[in-house]
Amino acid sequence: MITKIIGTGSYLPSKRVTNEDLSKIVDTNDEWIVSRTGIKERRVVEQESVIELATKAGRQAIEQAGISLEEIDLILVATMSSDFALPNVASSVQACLKAVNAIAIDMNTACSGFIFALSVADSYIRAGIYRTVLIIGAETLSRIVDWNDRGTCILFGDGAGAVIAKASSQGRFEQVLYTDGSSGNCLAMKKEEKNHSFITMNGQKVFRFAVKKVPEVIEELLQQTKTKKEQIKYFLLHQANKRIIHAVSEKLSVPIERFPMNLQWYGNTSAASIPILLDEMNRKNLLERGDSIILSGFGGGLTWGSILLQW
Ligand code: ACO
Image (cartoon, rainbow, N blue to C red; front, side, top):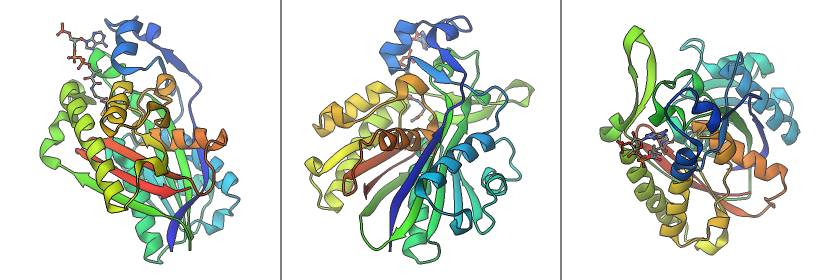
């Protein structure tokens, strides 16, 4: 058996924060942010918890998949911004949804979170242990950024995306994943004064890491699966930065039109960015059954990886 995605969902909080809004908080401007990142605005939670975001996205995916709540065997929530360490987000989502037969696990591999969680779901499905998995990427990064640091606060946004993965006798699901813990310090959460933890980042190091490793891992995946780039309809990359996505498109010699983007509206939503994009494309009917697509995540850990799947 192999993983097939049979439903998608997403949820974005309604509050928009534009670059203009940010220029009133830190010394920055729209031109700098757009030219360096491509980001125009992002969504930010007011009262909502990451559990609420995750539950709303999950519910949409369940509705679209047309499955019953009792069918769900496993809930995986990829997040690095859970409201509490205990209970984990996934258990709270299980309770909110009343998915009483599901076990529930949180996974934190930062911006690669959705890719790693999808790969874990596929392993359970292949092993015949579980058949129906709800995978959610959900983040409230606005609660863990330092709003005084113009180098990071302009980048991130809040949101959630979800998919239902179901065991299928047909399809394709192949993956290549990596971790390099020795470089982990360039993207971290460190305790600052008053014991608050904020995201800290060496932006240039992360940029160089992404533009080197993402094309490499995609090439490796294509080689491993004996697939030509022309056979891939879309490359859905983690939505961190427009310049990173353009650099990957150039290195792979694949036209930028096959790298869909929505980061201009949501910023970098970490583990949520790929499933939000996937849901948007699905709801716009841009994906047809049988299409091959590549999903590619990269971020803290450092972690990175790509999945080739048949829609
Ligand atoms: N507005 C105006 N000026 C700024 C801002 C800002 N928001 N932030 C930094 N600057 C200034 C710096 O202070 C510096 O000024 P100086 O030359 O007087 O010292 C100048 O702009 C250049 O700063 P750099 O940090 O060198 O700018 P860079 O061109 O590297 O762009 C950026 C920064 C956008 C963060 C870039 O490094 C990047 O995209 N890195 C990738 C990181 C990323 O996407 N991280 C997301 C999380 S990780 C992930 O999802 C993989």
